[in-house]
Length: 146
Image 1 (cartoon, one colour):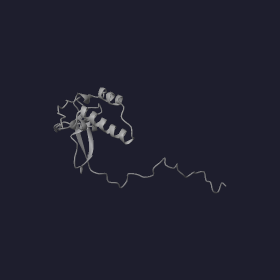
Image 2 (image 1 turned 45 degrees about the vertical axis):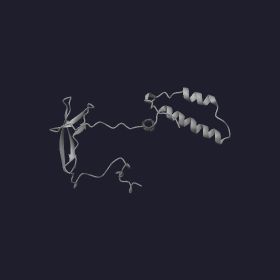
Image 3 (image 1 turned 120 degrees about the horizontal axis):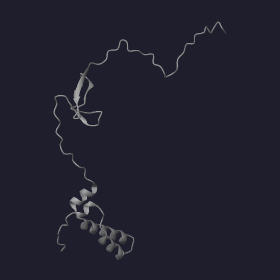
Image 4 (image 1 turned 90 degrees about the horizontal axis):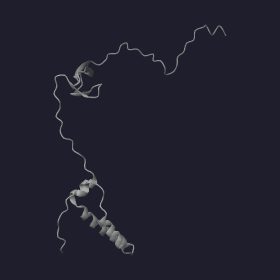
Protein backbone atom coordinates (compact mmCIF):
# COMPACT_ATOMS: atom_id res chain seq x y z
CA UNK A 1 0.00 0.00 0.00
CA UNK A 2 2.96 2.28 0.46
CA UNK A 3 3.62 2.19 -3.27
CA UNK A 4 0.26 3.86 -4.00
CA UNK A 5 0.31 6.28 -1.09
CA UNK A 6 3.44 8.41 -1.22
CA UNK A 7 2.54 10.68 1.70
CA UNK A 8 0.85 13.42 -0.32
CA UNK A 9 -2.89 13.73 -0.13
CA UNK A 10 -4.36 15.50 -3.09
CA UNK A 11 -7.95 16.53 -2.92
CA UNK A 12 -10.20 19.39 -1.95
CA UNK A 13 -13.17 20.22 0.13
CA UNK A 14 -16.22 20.55 -2.07
CA UNK A 15 -17.71 24.00 -2.18
CA UNK A 16 -15.24 25.53 0.26
CA UNK A 17 -12.45 26.73 -2.01
CA UNK A 18 -12.64 28.30 -5.43
CA UNK A 19 -9.82 27.55 -7.84
CA UNK A 20 -10.71 30.44 -10.12
CA UNK A 21 -8.43 33.42 -10.19
CA UNK A 22 -8.75 36.98 -11.42
CA UNK A 23 -6.19 36.56 -14.17
CA UNK A 24 -7.15 37.57 -17.71
CA UNK A 25 -10.36 39.27 -16.54
CA UNK A 26 -11.16 42.82 -17.57
CA UNK A 27 -13.38 44.58 -15.05
CA UNK A 28 -15.94 47.11 -16.24
CA UNK A 29 -14.77 50.70 -16.24
CA UNK A 30 -16.04 52.53 -13.19
CA UNK A 31 -16.54 56.03 -11.94
CA UNK A 32 -16.63 57.07 -8.29
CA UNK A 33 -19.53 59.44 -7.61
CA UNK A 34 -19.26 61.70 -4.58
CA UNK A 35 -22.21 62.17 -2.23
CA UNK A 36 -22.46 64.77 0.53
CA UNK A 37 -24.60 64.15 3.61
CA UNK A 38 -26.30 67.05 5.46
CA UNK A 39 -24.53 65.77 8.61
CA UNK A 40 -21.12 66.46 7.02
CA UNK A 41 -20.34 62.93 5.82
CA UNK A 42 -18.70 62.56 2.43
CA UNK A 43 -18.57 59.21 0.64
CA UNK A 44 -18.11 57.77 -2.82
CA UNK A 45 -20.20 55.12 -4.56
CA UNK A 46 -18.79 53.25 -7.60
CA UNK A 47 -20.96 53.17 -10.71
CA UNK A 48 -20.22 51.80 -14.16
CA UNK A 49 -19.23 54.45 -16.66
CA UNK A 50 -21.97 53.16 -18.97
CA UNK A 51 -24.60 53.75 -16.27
CA UNK A 52 -27.39 55.71 -17.90
CA UNK A 53 -28.74 57.33 -14.76
CA UNK A 54 -26.74 58.04 -11.66
CA UNK A 55 -29.13 58.88 -8.80
CA UNK A 56 -29.00 62.34 -7.23
CA UNK A 57 -29.85 60.96 -3.79
CA UNK A 58 -28.17 58.03 -2.00
CA UNK A 59 -28.67 56.77 1.55
CA UNK A 60 -25.85 57.67 3.93
CA UNK A 61 -24.59 55.38 6.70
CA UNK A 62 -26.26 57.64 9.26
CA UNK A 63 -29.68 56.98 7.70
CA UNK A 64 -30.19 60.39 6.09
CA UNK A 65 -30.38 60.90 2.34
CA UNK A 66 -27.17 62.31 0.90
CA UNK A 67 -27.06 64.48 -2.20
CA UNK A 68 -24.72 63.93 -5.13
CA UNK A 69 -21.93 66.52 -5.19
CA UNK A 70 -22.88 69.64 -7.21
CA UNK A 71 -26.47 68.45 -7.70
CA UNK A 72 -29.73 69.95 -6.49
CA UNK A 73 -32.44 68.24 -4.50
CA UNK A 74 -35.16 66.74 -6.71
CA UNK A 75 -38.62 68.27 -6.52
CA UNK A 76 -40.79 66.45 -4.05
CA UNK A 77 -44.20 66.36 -5.63
CA UNK A 78 -47.04 65.57 -3.25
CA UNK A 79 -47.74 61.87 -3.06
CA UNK A 80 -51.23 60.92 -4.08
CA UNK A 81 -52.94 59.17 -1.22
CA UNK A 82 -54.74 56.02 -2.22
CA UNK A 83 -58.47 55.87 -1.76
CA UNK A 84 -60.21 52.91 -0.25
CA UNK A 85 -63.46 51.45 -1.53
CA UNK A 86 -65.24 53.12 1.36
CA UNK A 87 -63.84 56.53 0.33
CA UNK A 88 -65.07 56.05 -3.22
CA UNK A 89 -68.52 55.00 -2.06
CA UNK A 90 -68.79 58.05 0.19
CA UNK A 91 -68.00 60.28 -2.79
CA UNK A 92 -71.20 59.06 -4.42
CA UNK A 93 -73.56 58.43 -1.50
CA UNK A 94 -74.14 59.50 2.07
CA UNK A 95 -74.29 57.12 5.00
CA UNK A 96 -78.06 57.63 5.19
CA UNK A 97 -78.40 56.66 1.51
CA UNK A 98 -76.32 53.57 2.13
CA UNK A 99 -78.51 52.61 5.07
CA UNK A 100 -81.64 52.96 2.92
CA UNK A 101 -80.06 50.86 0.17
CA UNK A 102 -79.00 48.23 2.70
CA UNK A 103 -82.49 48.00 4.16
CA UNK A 104 -84.00 47.76 0.69
CA UNK A 105 -81.70 44.88 -0.29
CA UNK A 106 -82.24 43.20 3.08
CA UNK A 107 -86.00 43.46 2.57
CA UNK A 108 -85.68 41.79 -0.85
CA UNK A 109 -83.65 39.00 0.74
CA UNK A 110 -86.28 38.38 3.41
CA UNK A 111 -89.00 38.54 0.75
CA UNK A 112 -87.25 35.91 -1.40
CA UNK A 113 -87.25 33.62 1.64
CA UNK A 114 -90.95 34.19 2.19
CA UNK A 115 -90.55 36.06 5.50
CA UNK A 116 -90.83 39.65 6.59
CA UNK A 117 -88.01 41.70 7.96
CA UNK A 118 -88.27 42.26 11.71
CA UNK A 119 -88.79 45.86 12.74
CA UNK A 120 -85.91 45.53 15.19
CA UNK A 121 -83.46 45.11 12.28
CA UNK A 122 -84.56 48.37 10.67
CA UNK A 123 -84.42 50.32 13.91
CA UNK A 124 -81.01 48.83 14.75
CA UNK A 125 -79.63 49.86 11.37
CA UNK A 126 -80.96 53.38 11.65
CA UNK A 127 -79.55 53.84 15.17
CA UNK A 128 -76.22 52.18 14.48
CA UNK A 129 -73.59 54.39 12.84
CA UNK A 130 -70.27 53.00 11.65
CA UNK A 131 -67.39 54.03 13.91
CA UNK A 132 -65.12 55.41 11.21
CA UNK A 133 -63.79 58.84 10.32
CA UNK A 134 -65.97 58.83 7.21
CA UNK A 135 -69.20 59.22 9.16
CA UNK A 136 -68.68 62.96 9.20
CA UNK A 137 -69.64 63.14 5.52
CA UNK A 138 -72.05 65.97 4.88
CA UNK A 139 -75.59 64.77 4.48
CA UNK A 140 -77.24 65.64 1.20
CA UNK A 141 -80.68 67.16 1.42
CA UNK A 142 -83.02 65.60 -1.10
CA UNK A 143 -86.73 65.54 -1.32
CA UNK A 144 -88.11 62.04 -1.44
CA UNK A 145 -91.39 63.03 -3.02
CA UNK A 146 -92.69 60.90 -5.86
